[in-house]
Image 1 (cartoon, helix red, strand yellow):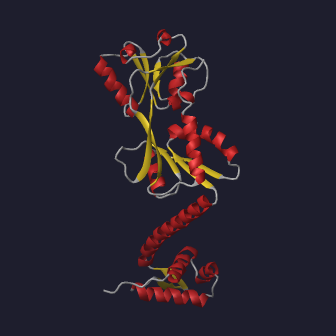
Image 2: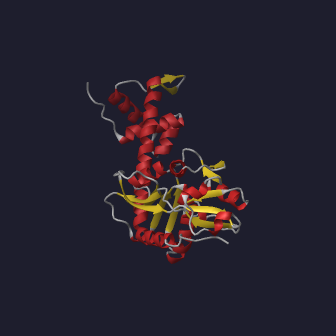
Length: 304
């Protein structure tokens, strides 16, 4: 069985015919004459080996086979549009564009704060900051739809280049809490304390529960939340202690709460991702440097 010889102009004529409904409208979209569109459609029918249209009451009506074929054409067309978009992004990156994809932990407050310092130093740069789940950030970096990515990834992730950063754990508590006088908080200190925790599937919560069980420490009460902002808000009302990373803790920025180091690491980390074997533009290198400078400021002992 022969393989159909499909030509770009034939597919384009078919696409516009299906979407416009008439040969006249399709010809207008292609900026050509009606006989030219009709000829392209007949050539396409010959090449694919089945009828695409039937004439009903003087109009060309798509056959069921044409509708099935059109769904595949639309799918392929989206892929071509994606390629065009990728080419545009690559071209714009070369003339001063910077695209960053990040997980919410960094995207909500920390990276906007980095940009507050970075943008005035690069006033002509076009910058795009988008927030995705970590899995999508990896895909954005792999396909080079962004220059830099920030995500939580597995150590054996080899589809992108990565630099890992480990965050210490901090205990957030009200200023008048009995433990606020300690220089650091041990896991055993959390015994019989009201604890504000993230949801059970959160990696930080899983490791914290493991450490508590190992130390024989049993919190008096647990309040579960989804977001660090919720946790710090509850802490400010004196409802318990929350275990946070420095980035989430710094986003609170209000009084009434103090931060103390947790004496053990819970393994909270993230990675800065770049396309594999792809050199960074000068603009991306400059942003990475600004990010690292900001990261060095996170080890804040307390709010007050």
